Amino acid sequence: MKIELSNFIVEYDKEINYIQSIISTLENDTDKILDFFELDKLSQKKKVVIFTSREEYKKHMLQFVPEFKEWMCADTYDGNINLLEISEARKSKSHANMGVDEFVKDVLHEFVHSCQQELNTKSEGVGWYWEGLATNLSGQYFKPISLSDCNFEKLKNDFYDVNNCYSYAYTIGKYMLENYSKDKLLEYVKNPNLLKKDEDKIFYESIEWSNSGVKGVRK
Image (cartoon, rainbow, N blue to C red; front, side, top):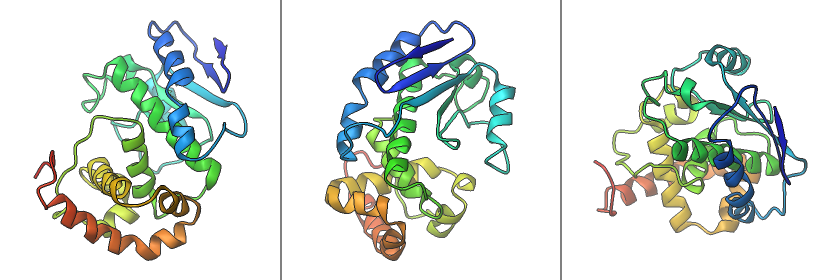
């Protein structure tokens, strides 16, 4: 089945009872993300592919990652926004209680990556920053945590093998969004080498911020 929207083409192969929630999110909640990246629209309509088989999604992911993690349920590796349908995502411990609201925030998370890719397709070594922006701008349900025990070298080089990787990225991203200008944040997206030059300073600033009694920080 295929639904064509103003900026998206949604593809899925069986009835999904929450498809209208996905359509509403894509039509109404993506403009603010485009605005952040100073984009009027994407360069071409973005395909949104909803996988209704966990095995098929695993096969898709193994084209891009060395190991399929049980929590993996969304990506933009091939340029599309790829999502694992809710009932299949719930088969993992990490997403056992996934609801429609969490799912549509995953859609927005991947849309952030699509916008990042419009500015720069290279995220090697700065994935923590891309995920920091995506978790914050999508409105996903993370809270800032203390960074005192975060191995930043591993987070930079082996993101998915770090416990709490997304919470760490969210915390650093939240610090940057609250303390850096949007021009500087976009410059970091466009020029990852500049980010790599500044990343240790950013990380140590983030540690101090997360340990300074910021409201909501989980120790």
